[in-house]
Image (cartoon, rainbow, N blue to C red; front, side, top):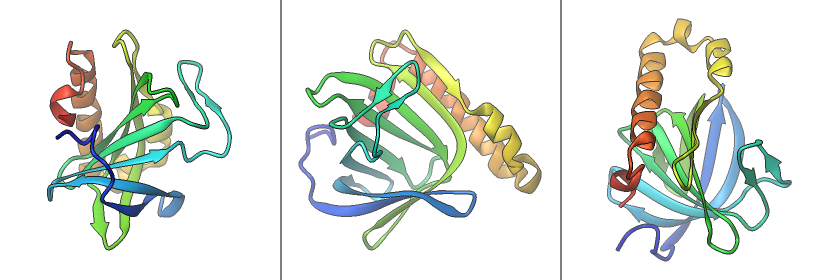
Length: 167
């Protein structure tokens, strides 16, 4: 059974950390944890609609989120309240940790969007990443982050997109 169709087995708090501070915390249903990849599902955690111009995240949207303990990214499948696939939002982040009921992920500013039909693939927030100073403070982490973004972009541009990662 794929994580996309699974029912939650427990609840965890997803904690997104940025620059050493908690950016957002929200409850999510734990769908799968094989020791390397963790899948959770949660409604849109924002209080208001967020319009990026190329996609809108709004009340009722459902995010099925995939995190890895050995990879520098998270992939989030975004569906509208009626189940229509909007696309995938990818966060470049340090490998995730799940301790007790907390799934902690450190956001490294870089992001990637792939629309449901694959016609819109875009790198996001490269300016924020450059301004973060990570390349100076932790060159190895910065290199891993850029390599992860490049790898996700290559997958996003393939015909099957993220299917191999998420099945």
